[in-house]
Amino acid sequence: MKYHNALKIIVILVICSASVYAQTPLDEYEPYNPTVMRSRIALDTDAYYFVASTYLYGLRPSYFFGLPNNKHTMGITVPFIHSIFAGDFGGYENTTGIGDIKFTYYGVPFQSEDLLGFNRLTFALEVTAPTGNEQVGRGTGAWVYKPALVANIRPIPNAFFFPQINFQFSTSPLNSLGGGDGLPDPEDTDLERQLQVLGASFPFTLTIDQAEAWFTLSADYLYSFSESTSFLFIRMDVGKMLGKNTSGGLQISKFVAGQPRLETLVRARFNFFLGR
Image (cartoon, rainbow, N blue to C red; front, side):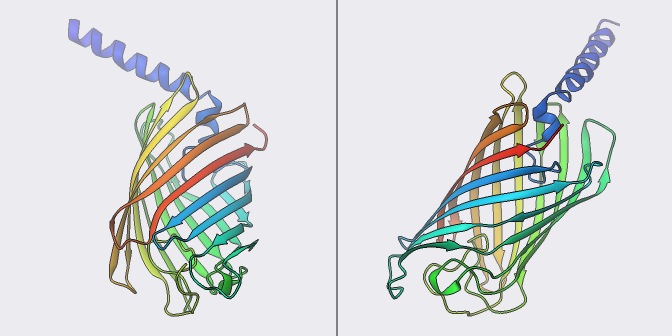
């Protein structure tokens, strides 16, 4: 009987903590979720460091429109890229301009009413248009597509798994290689082959109620079919709510195994949510 009462108390505490947690802006907007379903203006600042002493810096403002049911979101990202190349690019070794514009769609084919367990499956699609100049390293020179499935698994109120599988591909040759997240090839701007990259990510996120903050650790695996090459990155994210409708975070991805190409990605991300 003593253990039975203790078990009831534990269950009540878990339910109460989940109820309180769901009322915070952090859990309402879910900025830690890779498929945020809320209307917002986002701003990313990126720094890419390649093995061949090449650097790309990006400023990526985005607008996302989410339907009121939180099951469909559409977005557009217009990147501005500053590239620094170590080789000879005919006077364009250090330039700035618009990159490849990205269109994003998130749809939720399954969502459970349960707070805990497997409670959401999201279909994601990214389509990148060849609007950047591929000859100076700001574009890939082809349309790129990236469908994905992302699961939302919540074993306890303050912990999440967001396993994802995706396939990034182009229908025509381009100057992008595997392991570069669809970025232009920093060593060769010629259009050589189609992009065919299978990706799998395994993020684990912990949230901190009192600070309205989160911490994520992820292993990201990529395999390029066109190159028969694998890549493994370890990614860490930290972030917090900066106000009732604003979040900020820092992401660092580090190459750990496979074909050395993109060594490090550092990204600062801000979300400005529109309404509650």
